[in-house]
Amino acid sequence: MKKRTVGAVMLMTATLIWGTAFVAQSLGAGYLGPFTFNGIRFLIGAFVLLPFILVTNYHKNGRQTRENRAQSGDRLRVLGAGAACGVLIFAMAALQQIGISYTTVGKAGFVSALYVVMVPILGLVFGRRVGARTWVCIALATAGLYFLCMRERISLGFGDALMLISAFVTAIHILVTDYYSSKVDCLQLSCLQLFVCGALSLAAAFLFEKPTLPSILAAAAPILYMGVLCCGAAFTLKTLGQKNVPPTAASLILSLESVFSVLSGWIFLKETLSLREAAGCALMFGATVLSQLPESGRRKKTQAAEIAD
Image (cartoon, rainbow, N blue to C red):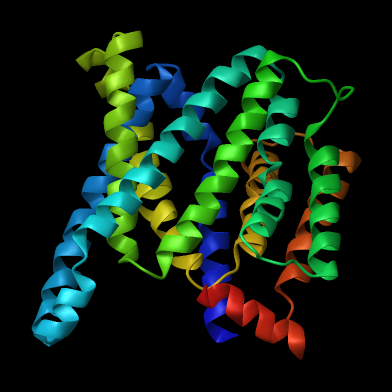
């Protein structure tokens, strides 16, 4: 239970970083195209992690026997995991960036966060059963997202369809990260997925955009903030946190990004927080807290088995 609590705190910290980063994102978007901005910030995040990986590997190699070193040095598995996660992040970010141009911000926020429902449904395909209390939490979180984001009638246009596909990709990324987080070094996985996403984004930038050095230098502050904190720190915390938190519970915590975004605008930018938005925040916080409360008996054993899978 202690490990799960630490994991939940890591996921919450990552979500808090992402939720309060919209100011830096909006500033960066004023100077650079989305692929250029994403490419540079993801690569910065990858390079930030390199010293930590080198130090960690140095200490590991000093302690490990040849047998353990061979067991932990499955480079092909790490490369495969990093490539898979990096491609998923790139697809998720690209779909969101294109989709938001064809829909409203509120609908984009609601639809893209529907991974909170997709994760347990996809989990059922792989034999991950979810208890009744968790489904209640998912329903509460979805209702909270609706109150928080939606201002119009539900309809599905081209942009909404792209955001829905993005949510599906996000759900797959959560499950893939959950699968690999207990099988490979989490720091290496985080670094590799950031590098792959950054490289793909820069390739797309040179194909579809015209990045220039003056525009990059003008956006240096938001790029550094997003690269070091939102990529290097937050994605690493997410990967480490998922090691001890079941994917459905992790998705509920990660869905709080919308809440932190609204609350940070209310606190720092003096934006108005309506009663409807406050109710949405309360529902989502309540659902997340309820999902993290300790279970007893048979359900506890089931959750332990989920983490071990």
